[in-house]
Image (cartoon, rainbow, N blue to C red; front, side):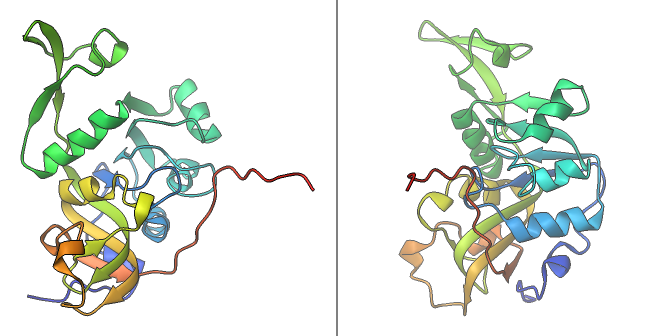
Length: 232
């Protein structure tokens, strides 16, 4: 088996991207996003993308960079309130949006990774989320059918990984990353610390290396979406 370790973000995406593909991206706000892989994705010039992510970053960081360059055609998201360019494109019908409740989105990603094509949930019944979806009654309550998500490519960020692709996330930066890592036909992970295979405690691994195809170490740039400070 060849090495999974990549020397650069450009190498990590080499041969994996094409126009019109579906890409799942980990993170919540700016926490736990694969920021360097997103930059590399922007630099490929690939377009007409469907991107699955809890949100779209901010105007000048994260997935907001791909909105600036108009590389995203459709977003499947839960929360989009921090990005003015997202709002502008959506309100002017330049960007397609599929709103998905946050827990439903997490389960759609997990289900796709587990090979489950769909599941029923009460979340969204009676709202626009339920429009056009199959309804079914269980035990006297209405449920709607949600489809599992399989992505052509998944991009995730972890704190520590080994050369076999096993990943450990740190605190809230875990968020959507484990589910995203599962749902990709090909998964690429960037990590802050890359260690030799065998150094990680198996009981501490959140994403087994079987889900990860390529891995590389990057230097993290930690940004804060909204900074609130006391007046002096």
